[in-house]
Image 1 (cartoon, rainbow, N blue to C red):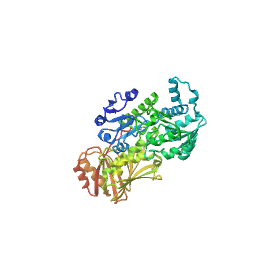
Image 2: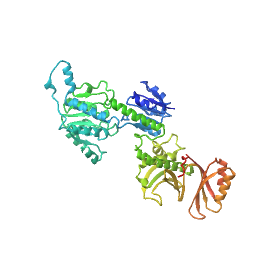
Image 3: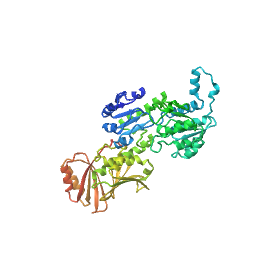
Image 4: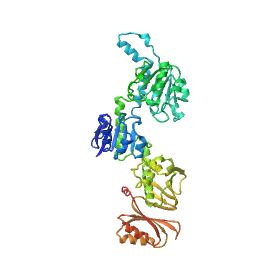
Length: 533
């Protein structure tokens, strides 16, 4: 049974999904040494923000296949190390979006209506109504930095408050922003025009201290800053100076550069409302993220693609149904070439012809590389790390597209460059089954499955008969034969499907047949039987 390590408290309904399907091991607040010891015996690990899944932890997880982040941010997971080892990293990007968006408005209202000060004053027996005169959100301009899932939810709610909404996000199409009633602007314009600024960007190289001294000085004087994204996005020293000078009227902070922010002067500043990273901490959100994460962990453990992979493209159910046969085809093409290869691979070009070019080809390319490198890689390969493994071996990878070829409306062609020149394999799918239709310059047609005998030969009468006799004498049954040739008496290839084991000495005898220049055995996974119509 698979073992799943849970590092942080998680919703009971999510744990119930594992009942009878996996053994649950809980870290229960133990230290880093225990984490490494436990992950070494685990097939999956599920974390929130408490545990840090570092390279050393990942390298200790020799059985590890998936890391689930019960939340959105994955900055506590070494994605590079996980990808290199072919470990899926999944998260739940949608499940807490509403909770965080609502928390933004809780902070905005707490600041603009001075709720904390008013409550503390009242608790001390005071009745100072005029001292806590606030500001309305209606009619104010809200600047959203990052118009992704959460930023979009904030924009929808801001319009209900009667706010004008502007945003800065270089990766959002203008039509999408228009649909939300949002005007896209440059960062400098957003800072200068906004009465309230809310941040919704990830922790990344380009967002570290995105708002520093210069940016805060460019803000409209008396603006409010809300940060429910990541603490590193704001330079806290610059923020403190802007609050002290009155450049900013206030800040609502749910995240900090260091968490917990022990001793930070921001925690006691009169113009700050601070919360301990609880933006997504609602009952509904925590249950939702836990369920969504655990479902994906089970998907990976049971051999299915997850719905929200962080280190591979996400696919809808329709895309999975469309791509599934081509992922299988591409991997089989790669494995077939691997078995018949002569020389080391220098570069790989994968050409998508006809309707195949309309697919999300990145995963199909990864599947081809996975098949190509299986058996030669020193780490397990899958769709996550196959491209990384190729690049680390110095193999350049390109994708191209082309019009339909011959009778095939969809075609995937591997062009492999070596010292010996370029080699080609092409395939397609028919009725959901993979077919190889070209080897080098020879057109052919067979299902790449099971044990196949591949030969290169000079075409001449009697070659099929001699091959059949040799295999028959060795009790090797033939299931099919396919031959491709350039012309009578020219070069050709032969594919023989066999049902029985061939020894190395049997293969040597095949190589000794007249006109056979080269022979290889190719072993591929079988295919499920298809009932006759």
